[in-house]
Length: 207
Image 1 (cartoon, rainbow, N blue to C red):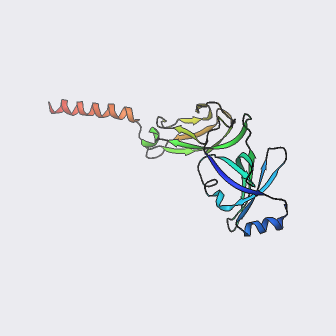
Image 2: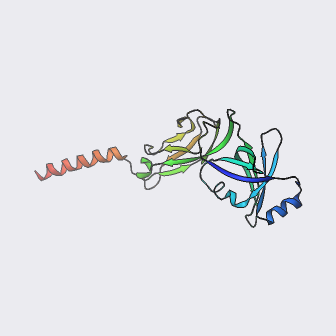
Image 3: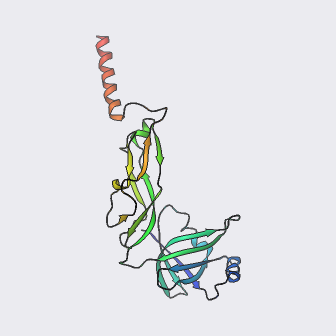
């Protein structure tokens, strides 16, 4: 899991008036929970440029008032419904040696054989809830789909895990390769055999 460091200042006044004033100054009100007592702070909106707009789960190393440090993950955030301004962000404290569950994005590797033969890739899940300690938490789940044929599915139970647990039912389909009007009846291996047979037939006819 890749880490990003941000800095902030603790908040004493937690009212909505104070929060609005912070936003006018280019700051975002935030909270860290999971520590026993919620910790309210504010950080510059630019801190989120590489946090919210990325296709991986990140470890956020937060330093408050230049001294207190926390390791956390983003748990929730809120945007203004009209202006898309970031209004608030929640972090969950990540204690070393203690397991927590977060949503980890899925990254597909390769082009499925069934898609190459005219099938259609249908993705059902783009993230999976993963339970792990800080040392074992992946930032992304890379799934190779090269060998999948038409009619086949990649399920939660097919994902290789190492030191972490996926908190979804094992039989849940992550993606499927569906048939379509453009489907080719043969897979790649059969195509090579077909071409060989056609060549042999042509040679026999010429003889």
